[in-house]
Amino acid sequence: MRLPATASVPDRWLLSRLLRILGPIPVRFVLNGEATSPPASSPLLSTVRIRDRRTMAGLLLDPEITFGDAYSDGSIEVEGDLVSLLEVVYRAMQERGKRGWCSRLVSRWLDFQQANTSSGSRRNIHEHYDLGTDFFRLWLDRQLLYTCAYFPTPSSTLDEAQEAKMDLVCRKLQLQRGETVVEAGCGWGALAIHMARQYGVRARAFNISHDQILYARRRAAEEGLSGQVEFIEDDYRNITGRYDAFVSVGMLEHVGSSHYPELGNVISRAIGRSGRGLLHFIGRSRPAALSSWIRKRIFPGAYPPALREVMEIFEPSGYTVLDVENLRLHYARTLEVWLERFERSRQRVIEMFDPQFARAWRLYLAGSMLAFRVGTLQLYQLVFAGPQSQWAPWSRAQLYAGQPEPEPRRTWIPVMS
Image (cartoon, rainbow, N blue to C red; front, side, top):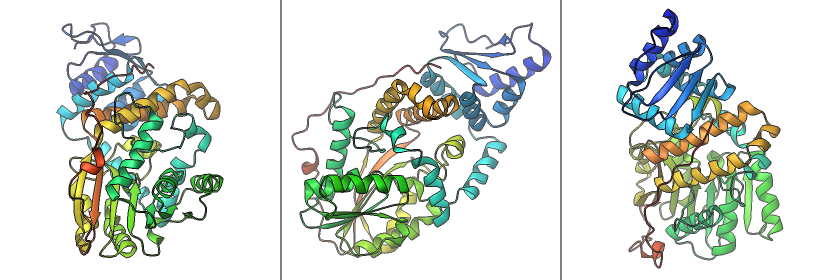
């Protein structure tokens, strides 16, 4: 990549610094009417228009926060496929190695500001999940599951895949009629209702999102399950009672690794030494913080753990890990469908909020889809049991019997600016 001879001295210097960071990628960067020239050996992927020198300087100082905020407010415009742009830039940044000092400082400040204490967790959850059920209804499935789906076949719809995910969770726990289950972080209540209706268990579900709890209670009442499912608006740390099984789908990311021993104590108190449980969570192959921009603007307090960090939950109580499965590609597909549906509802999102909000959430969904595709993020399902449990699956046959092995599937949806 090279700079035109006509570029002004400040613009030339700023653009040259950006090219030094990213290297020869097939992207044209435009600043104040001046543009870089991408490598002639590669077809042009996209053009990134940067409004002013202040935005460009921010990209050099803290690319994560600046790109997210500038794309959201229109200071950066992308001509071409957003997902493909994010991929090439991500791979270029990976080759660069460590994040800059400013990015590291912002990340540590967010860790402190968004700590998942009892009050901090309530504030963090409110900022994301209490945006309104009508908003999430635009692009989630009909039961409002905001976690990774499981696609038995490439042709499965989102509704079918979310139903299949709930069945997969229940089969992994081998739930039996009459058993008791406690769920930590229940969203809009779909899994607790599914367990009660399809498997005959009695479920108690804890959640600190007021809007979600109200919705879940209404749905349980409408389905005649209020006597079998109880939705409690409270923190997971306040779970009481003794149960046969513990389940948590999509909550561990909001706990924070410093609170894992505390969560372990809650699980031990809930299922004792003979119960079993399942955790379904976004994770990483090695410890690393989530994107600072996502934590600042979308998911405050979020942290996807590495598997070895999760063992801090189980080791103090002597719990045994019985099964671990990685559904990373299923989450990539889930996000692909969410993004398709979000794009179709984009005008409605703008009417409900504003264009900046719509662009921010488009970036969040597109970036998350890419992260699961390239393997930056993983999706783990982990089954465990107490040290005195006599329950353990002999094989995995009960999970997949009769299900065909799908053909590999890889599609890329164009997400235009």
